Length: 168
Length: 135
Image 1 (cartoon, each protein chain N blue to C red):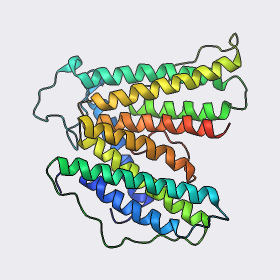
Image 2 (cartoon, chains in turn green, blue; image 1 turned 90 degrees about the vertical axis):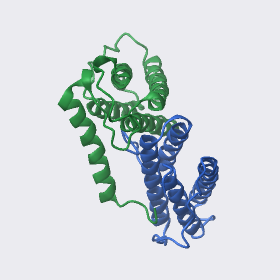
Image 3 (cartoon, helix red, strand yellow; image 1 turned 90 degrees about the horizontal axis):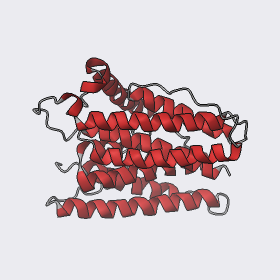
């Protein structure tokens, strides 16, 4: 790598990665999703195993984790606190990550009866839990591209957590 | 080059060269935080280079060597220096991401840790949080 990638090269790489994952999900559905052997370490000759595919289990687990974290961020972002902008950014990141996995954010429960401080703390605690889970998924995914996706998501959460810490 | 971490090592060589170049142009008196951040980033990439060299050598391959020189970025102002350092962190994050896709086990775990570190370091050079850095 003699020089850093140009913005255009990064954009193409990003689009390719996202497009490949999106097509894989759209083409075969979540229950039978294939994360593609390209650049990965999975055996391309291996037969599809349907819902027993360990990567499908990981994707489903990641979506569930993201839904929980997204709901926590959504509830905290509605508390009107100064930290709400960071939480809205965090939630926007979750929404993009869920879209990559072919899912959508669920509606957040009302935070009216919850202390705002506790709600905000819970949202960031949930973010740290999600980050750990995504790192673990990245380590165990059979597909290399799926592992990369999980790791990138974990890195995005890490950035959000760090940005929040820097703003205090 | 067959070991999947060889491209990352090549990237670390380039990162060290560029960070050393811009580090020599940042004013420690005028921009102490930027100077510290560039120095810290240089040391981290040097550590990554050393780790990769060992990993690749342990796998029975000869680690890729550094180029004699690399394309120098514009580094006349603090903004340019910050942008050059950010570009390095973004490009190495992409390399870590590619390494994650091409490895498994301990090598993948190494790349995952490196990606998270690089993503957070981007913030110190003016980067903003993204949903999926390194993808």
